[in-house]
Length: 424
Ligand SMILES: Cc1cc2nc3c(=O)[nH]c(=O)nc-3n(C[C@H](O)[C@H](O)[C@H](O)COP(=O)(O)O)c2cc1C
Ligand SMILES: [Fe+2]
Ligand SMILES: [Fe+2]
Image (cartoon, rainbow, N blue to C red):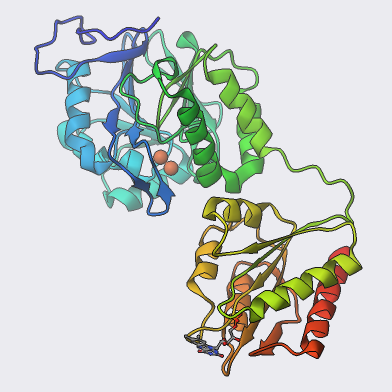
């Protein structure tokens, strides 16, 4: 269905050294650049299969529009592709669906070559892009939901998609070719030189990366994911062109991806409000905090027999499992001894994966053994206060080795915390 060709948009034969030009549909060219060797994205996200910074060029009979740019590191490669497609003409518009630097990194380089390009952008995007480029001469046209742009025989329709995953995000829909430019939404860090989902050899690895991408980037915004999907309900889409990874095509991964996004974003069904899922995380150098964890679990289940309490030793469980449990649980119990006047690094690493939106108002209780100064529990409590969690007023600390009375008190602490949950 889709073939690479060696002609640019004017139908001129390309020289051997010119980048090969691919297209999604007639008049919709691919100007993406590949980054196969990337292993970490945005400092925190592992990317086993590299990524691509996807960009497209839509060529109407009167106007041309680029959809996004690339990471700054690849600005030269990207511009070469753009020039090859344009064959001497200048683009009229640059549509910025989202302005994170992996998409806006080559905006300035583009303007050096084509200073008259008009940038089509959301209101929030306009503010972001000014601060990202630090340029006051950008020719910005702010669009809102349902606005459209005529390219001559082809029309770009803009759909605001806030918080998928920045406030600036929008989708761009090209009805005449049934192509949706979805930005990071439905994307994956998966470098596929042949560009399309049906060309991917290791399909399972690719779909696993779609899930990883969802968890890392879209997971904190699940209600917005559902709103974004609802906006696409009535569209008859043949191609979803995301800003990272393979293009999704109808009959291949397109329908699956939309369906899986909806499943992942649906709120978990609760059997009864009295059966909360409580995740307890702890670490313990000499077993003291571990003993407290055991007794606290006992106390919780005594007070709330229907509760599901899952306890995790932070050094024995895979980090991605821990993060998933951390963000899915209805309430959290976190225990750390004090070592060098703080909670241990494994606990802070766990908290680095917290979903900063869903943690708001979630009940959290802190405990731990300490020797003399005991900062772990108050430091953790402060962190959860800052995150606007509902921090249980009792903080359970025991000096060195818990006595039998301490263990009983730990169970009492668990009972009280459980009671505070059922009271809400
Ligand atoms: C290397 C090291 C550093 C410690 N630093 C502190 C400290 O700064 N403040 C404190 O209150 N206790 C400190 N302690 C004492 C521990 O918090 C105490 O031994 C505690 O009972 C350990 O609990 P656990 O068995 O759950 O690891 C330290 C212990 C170790 C081994
Ligand atoms: Fe992004
Ligand atoms: Fe991105």
